[in-house]
Image (cartoon, rainbow, N blue to C red; front, side, top):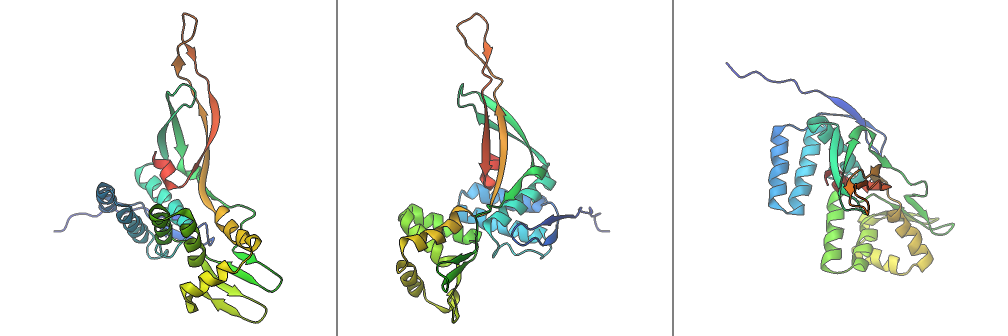
Length: 248
């Protein structure tokens, strides 16, 4: 006789980049093991692979983590984590005034991807010329970060622009990036004026991002000139951005 099985609950979420509703389940012990092994390796590439594999497994094939924007990956992973480990997380931050610890509770149900109203994928350079951009996926972002670390920020920026061009268009035709070499795309980018290039880089500056604002209020007691210690009482709002901010 086989061992009994446990029914795993299903939930629904809306993918930030597409508005599509998908089903998902919490990650299980087997997936948490994959994550822990990746963390122990201390290799960012292992963490990327583990995160994508877990998301693909937990979304029943309705979502492709390999080709999806980074902010989708971060949002969905946070939802999986919330259903598996608890929807309220406790974090601690250092008070900038007294340097004591400030405990903060964050409800993951209230964490969302924030869209900048100035963000555009369709970058119109002139009346007849434009560039349609595509969102970087997690592999691309990892590659960009590695390039910046090994070379410089300029090379990282140009690589980001080239890889995130979906197609270029003019009044007569459309030119998909997949049909052109990296050298051709680089030549096109280098032929732009600074104003046109800035229009393209604004795409990255205004990318949707996983963000949440927390109110810090330090209630630690600190030494004072008087006999009795006083409460620090420092207050400020802090913006968390990116998945790593929620596991500080």
